[in-house]
Image (cartoon, rainbow, N blue to C red; front, side, top):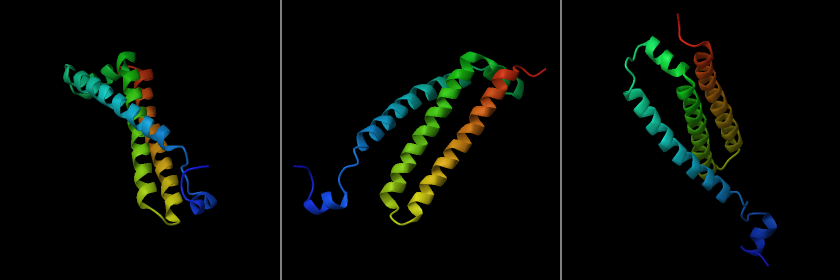
Length: 128
């Protein structure tokens, strides 16, 4: 009939069928993070100057801004997935929902600030 015990099926304690999806997203973002961090490290190492003007000029290029946006989105999504698992595994009382909501709000807020900063530099261009 199904997997699990009779009482588990009655209580709805069976598989939620979300584990493979979550696992797959963690692996995809981990791979993307490796490639994008490698790009980031090489790009930073090849910069001629590390002052404000040099970094702003580098980030104003679409060849730097687009991968940097992808890096920020991938890192924050991977961060949320990982901490969600930790909260779900180790938090078992009513504060679990509050912690998941706080995690989502923090991740969206911090990611939005990072994306805004990159877009502002990318669209305003080199400082005069």
